[in-house]
Length: 297
Image 1 (cartoon, one colour):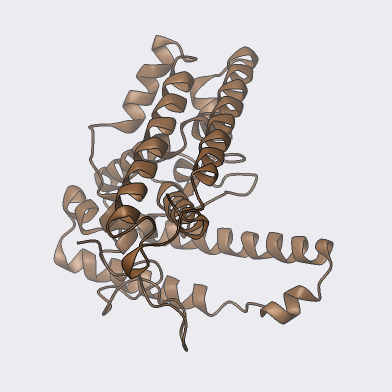
Image 2: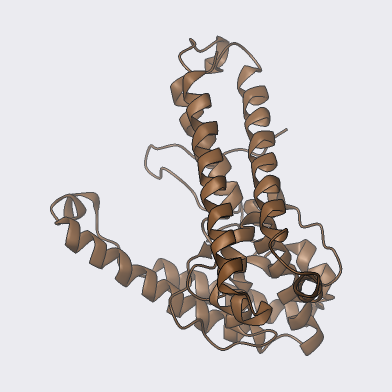
């Protein structure tokens, strides 16, 4: 049996992997400039997901695909480091200050923070775009599109940018809404089942249900979430016409198998770490908290 604590931790980890939460952000209304290589090509407007170049260009796998040479990589690394420093320099209220705020004040603060992050993301995206050759920028757009469609098919198709490119009808949008609701219901049901399976006592070494049980349960959970995403994607794509699917194929380009594990680990400094930084990734729990999660064996 899985413990409730383990289920909660596993769900958080799964969702973080699915959403690539540190760099997959909701883009503000208005989108940004469109066209291949533009910020609008990555974001997609209201309801879509914005995948920063700063995320993708940290991955060595992506750099190899784009054939980025050493001198170009050094320039990109310098831009990524400047982005990291500017982002980390943004003021953040402490927990005590947040606890004293009203709901309206917290909402306003969150929206302000999101706007500032989106503006910084847009500025960084455009700066990185200027460092790429046209064919590199186009290929990066294609990789981003594949990633968005794999992780969030319905929200991506419903984004302002994609609705325009695909010329979606009101009837199709309504069907996508239904597919989105069905996917949400499936996810809710899955989490309910996981909670119902909880309650077991941790085994030796703190592993739920005995040694090794935690890893097996986590793998099973990932498999269920992958199946749920595949089901949602299939329902969404069934709404499109053959011509619209051809447009999707053109936007995706040649298939690219991105290693999300390496991407989340942050090949070049992780989420927030400096390019090539020691240890990579963002440290958690400085001053006594939990450290960075070690890589899986």
